Length: 432
Image 1 (tube, rainbow, N blue to C red):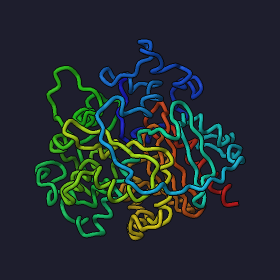
Image 2: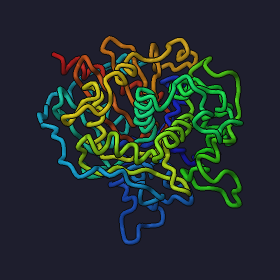
Image 3: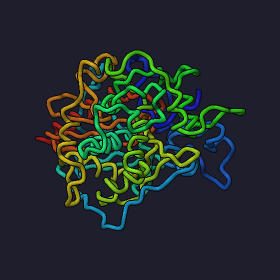
Image 4: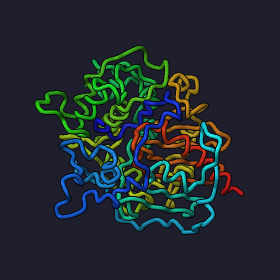
């Protein structure tokens, strides 16, 4: 198996049938603690997860590395600040594991507890009306540990980008090149800020993991997300790579999920604020939430954070961010994100443009400000990352789910059938 690119919620197998799930060791058999991955002094040679040779990105080693990224690559911290930790009052329930649902494409029920193993869950937290009603950890992830959020990262910066639009620092109808002149001759030169935020850009950029020539590989190697082959002479940073992206088709014609948009947004954020995206996250959100722990980013060779998928956080802190969004941007005694920004996200994007992407597990969904909006009767919306990372917010049920996982396949099309109906079933259960 080739190394799995990180931080890309590409859902590139959206057209794959649910029934085509390849065979892998199940969650119990692939448990990194049971397997002894990275245990010992030194660990046995066949139990070592390394960045340089790509082994850290191969299943089942990913079940360890996703919770230990800062041991393998350069990172930068996002400080929690000096304030007190905000409370998540515990009201743990014993009835959730038995909640049942029918997976997509199946006719036999599954329990909530069974779904966690089916999706190789590393940790999951459920908040209901602001109270912690469910919390589980598996493998090497602990409450005091951190896990890579993959493309859940995008929703943090889609939110910050929308905040900058609301503040007038970004004009959503202006061209990207207005803010980043260095991109004038790239595919992004005549794209608008709104088209980047909603990923309706027309780019020659493939995220097909099965294609060794897909542009995604050049992108992540430029940003030091994956090891570079001997003699590598390509772009050395995320921003250098962005300048090489070519146009394909016209902007604004269809939704096309491409991680490269998030790094363009990150560059615009950096330009108009004069601060890195990590500094923006700290000042605008992280230091205000009352989180328990610092977060951290994977960074490229000159310190640019990976806006497309490099954020690592504690699970409860991910849930706090979701709860803030559920509460119209207000949390920990302050308005952190303007309500108008949250409202704009919740209303969703253009469903017609989204439908052209062909996501079989996401009928009636849309995409707005780098959030996935379900369009269901509860108005649920989600931040999503490959291998099963998620924040799922159900406003009607007053429920927030934060999940970290290490599914062997990156595409959420393989996890959705036993995740999305489970989330909705739990929402209805909590409303009883």
